[in-house]
Length: 249
Image (cartoon, rainbow, N blue to C red):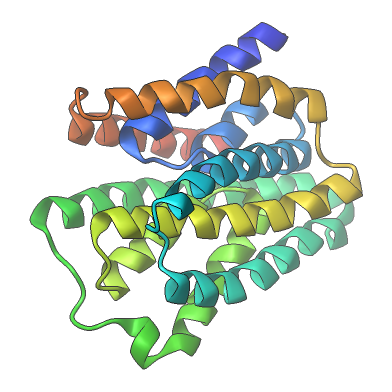
């Protein structure tokens, strides 16, 4: 099934590159529907997403697009939260698969709403009054911890939910918000992915096959971003994510 998984990675990579929708909300539910155990699907998705986002972060850091203040506070809360979420799957024992599946379904439904919400904010050019990290940095860390916990438990939500936090509570430009979101997602998913790797809940050949397709897919999607109508594409992906969440439940 290696070439089919690579094609899946290609499609997800193109979607991420063209629309900005995170890989986490698409990959894990598809893997579960293909018969992969929920815990393995989450661990594999975290490693796959982490590597993908590290590539994007390297590019954005070279262009000085990542905001260090927001990155520090979101990662400061997000990484411990992701570690707690990952450890929680181990403490659940035999119930882990069922709990992860239900939690993933709920997060996917929230992420679908977040995708639409994010697009609406961007379309209206809305930005927050002031900057929360300058006024209440501990609140940013607390929000990061909550999102990180969900990411560690389900692998989904790092892109959409951190992006909503940035768009609602920061005064960053859209380009810098996206770059900071990707960098935060990279730190959170890599941290949680390493724990899953140590716990043996990562299918490395599966992750490699996904990356084989997703890396060229992201590059191709990025080139198509200016040519494909992004708003209809994002809404289409949001519908797919919503259906995936309902089906996962």
